[in-house]
Length: 254
Image (cartoon, rainbow, N blue to C red; front, side, top):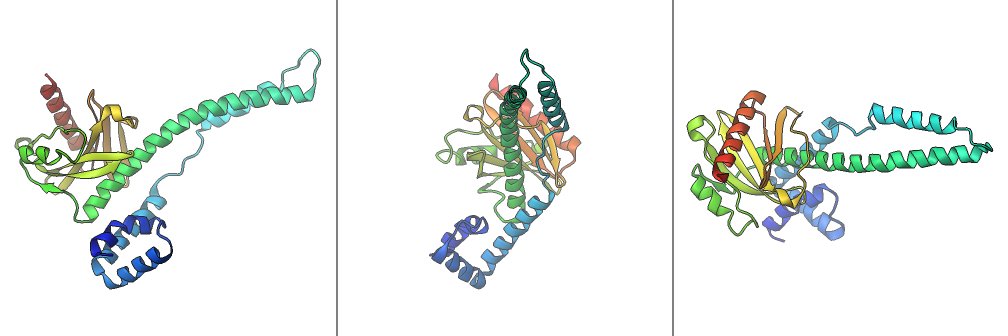
């Protein structure tokens, strides 16, 4: 394989998806290629950091209390002809109802948490490597046309250089099960990543604000696009930038 082929498979190798000869060829390449070895080490450190610092999902205290109360209430029911097995069947029926409802809530929360993880990982990966932009330009009329033919939508691109948030460029990324537009902006020495994709594509859920590993993330869904904004910039300034983005969207829609 060529060097670019090995570089394209680094993620798969780090996830343990390469087997047999492919894995051995990759290991040999990493011993011989310093650039790929450094990229692999950055990915390994990122994975280890996220595993160590991302919180484990546990059932909420309120849910555990509701399950206990439901079981006690069901076990305390006395039918006309009391038979122990009926009490347990009633308890099981109540529990199944709670669990089914909880699965739906948990699935939604898990999907939202997965998007948070993907957005954060994409931002950190871009900062650690040399792939912050595919098209580097401060001109929105250069960045926006670059996405033509590369995405099935035309992302809105604005430049806020006059307000202290200059456009740096754009790139393609992959979040929430599909390709997305990633726009990079600057604020002094900080980088702000804006991830967006069509709202009708789905995966619009998520907390409006979350902080992980020192990075702040803001999320909202407009009529046309779902937005995620992430940076290590202070919350106040990141909120100001997000308001500028929303105002620009609102003005463009008129």
